[in-house]
Image (cartoon, rainbow, N blue to C red; front, side, top):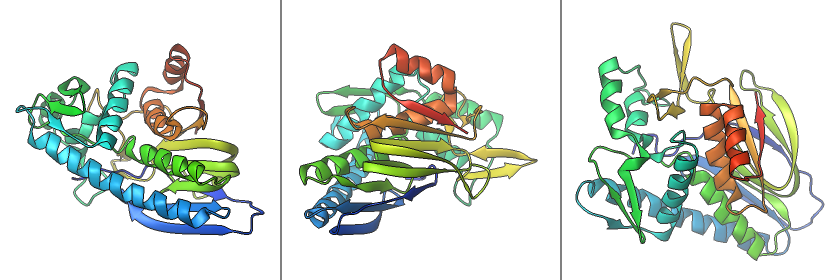
Length: 301
C-alpha cells in the first residue's frame, strides 16, 4: 500500500546516562528506522521483546487493512486486537476533531503520491471524485470486527500507527524495569524513558531550532519539510487535509506535541494531535484539548 506509513519529521536526541549496562538496536519497520535504547540489567530483553512485538504489530495491521478493504460493501471482518484498538482510537479522535484527523484519507494520499517519484498535482476533477472516498463515517466498528460501507475507501494509518508502536515498546520497557532509555520511531514519534533533552529540527534548515527536556513523556512532530515537491514556487507536502483532500494549508511549518507518560497511550495521542494541530492550527487544537481535558503541550515553528 502506497504511503501507508509516513515518516513525518526529524528530531535529534541528546542522551545523557550514567548507567553501565546499555543495549541499543536499530531495525527497519513501518517504513522507517526504529531505534530502541535501554539502560539497566534487563536492557537487552526489553529491546528484543519490543522489536518482536513491533514486527507482530506491523504484520497484523497490514493484514487487517487489506482484509477490511477487500470486504468493503460486503461484510464486517474480524481483525487483530491491535488493528481494532488502533481504529477505535482513530474513530474517537476523528469525532473529537470533526474529521480533521481521519484514517480514511488513503485514497487522497495515493492520488497525490507525495514522497514517491510519481508525485503530482491532481486535476480538479480527480480531487472532486476522491472526496467521495474519504470520510470516517464510512468506517464502522463492532465487537472486534470492522466494515467499510463503500468500496474504494482506503485506510491510511500513518497518523497514529507509529505512536501506537511506541506505546507498545514503552509498556514493555516498564515491565522490564527500564528507568532510562529512548524509544525512537524514525524520530517522528519518540518516548523519553527518564529525563532526556530532545532537539527539534528547524523546518527550514538543518540546525536544531529548539531543545526541550522530556521526562517519561512522548513527543511527536508533524511538518511540511520531509516529503514534498515544489511547483511554481508552491510547496506541496504529504500531510493531507481530509476536508479538502489537498495538502493542508497550515499556519506553521511544523507542530510538535508533548504528552506525559501518565496519560494512557500517550504516544498514540501525541501522534494524532501533531497531525491535527498542523492541519487545523494551534488555537483550535488547544480548544479541543481543553474541551476534552487532554493534558498536552504544543510547540509550533
